[in-house]
Image (cartoon, rainbow, N blue to C red):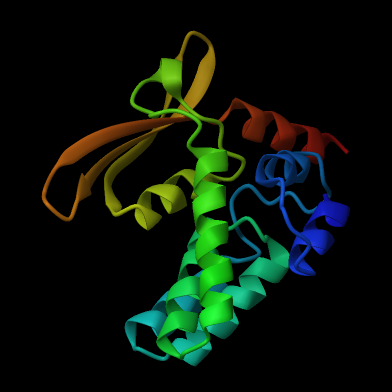
Length: 180
């Protein structure tokens, strides 16, 4: 994971986002709950809402130094960089958002049968936020001895949709890390 992470941070392209995300599950860096970045996320969103785009960009970069595949931090990076006139960074981060989204959303996620795999608790919520959905209900559900994150969402037009994400690999990795 660290090798893939360093290469992505250094700007080596293309990034194999799926390999990076899955390697994270086996790394000592694993933090499925996002405890290492939660405060940075709060500060990033606060700065963005206050139109302090330079600060938002800095907080997004700090998150990406820890977890480069964080889709929300990449999205704020793209937005904030565009607002301050840094087109190169904005375009790079926007491309990363699109590629990370493809890596996560390998299906429509509308049932447990089509549930894509997430590697952190925040990842499912993050990809939905980036594409314009806000979670109105979130819960863990079990189906056929597998665990899923269920998210009931609403978009900016008031359309309600339900999404499912497979969480088994994430929880299994978390248990392995605890056992070490």
